[in-house]
Length: 225
Image 1 (cartoon, rainbow, N blue to C red):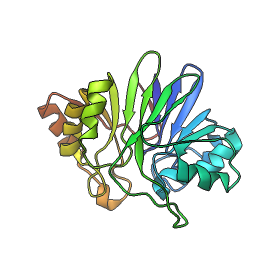
Image 2 (cartoon, rainbow, N blue to C red; image 1 turned 120 degrees about the horizontal axis):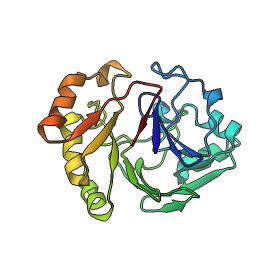
Image 3 (cartoon, helix red, strand yellow; image 1 turned 180 degrees about the vertical axis):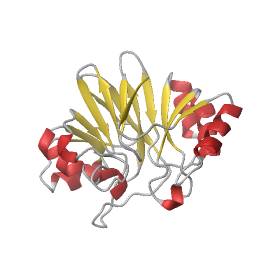
Image 4 (tube, one colour; image 1 turned 45 degrees about the vertical axis):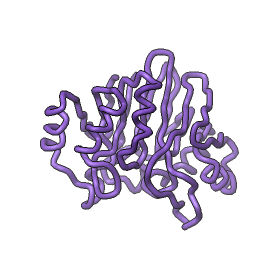
């Protein structure tokens, strides 16, 4: 699977001939040179309602006609703004698509939409394709539900927030890998704003000391899992 990282927590998965875009934060994103108008995903996943995860969801969904998988409250919010391709889900629910089974799982965070309305409960995603299983944590603290994911799924790669302040830092994220029974993380939610700036070498060293791998990808680059 090819993974394109646009910076912050925005990633695009390329599965066969299908594109899955997660947490589209493009226009206000200082790291990416990509334009929202350039994106044409088949599926959009939204973990929670904060601006730095949903900024371009309406624009990209409207132009692409992508299925939008997100919690019930965000799905309704988008429907009220003309997006009729939403597929609402809640914690523990699974949406079956042509290329992956996508399960919405718990995250310990907050969620409010850009206009101040209620954004429902925040979450992450377990993404199961025919060949591999990925975990996208969403914005979250370390939490014990990750142990359940590790017991239940064979997770090959985990997308984990590492910026601290509002989410896990590197020390918590490497413990999350232990819970998930996974050896490799792609970092996200770091460096975009001063409170979440990190020392890359120090963060990677934390993982190295635990026999784990942390990949901190440059924005607009593609990595193959």
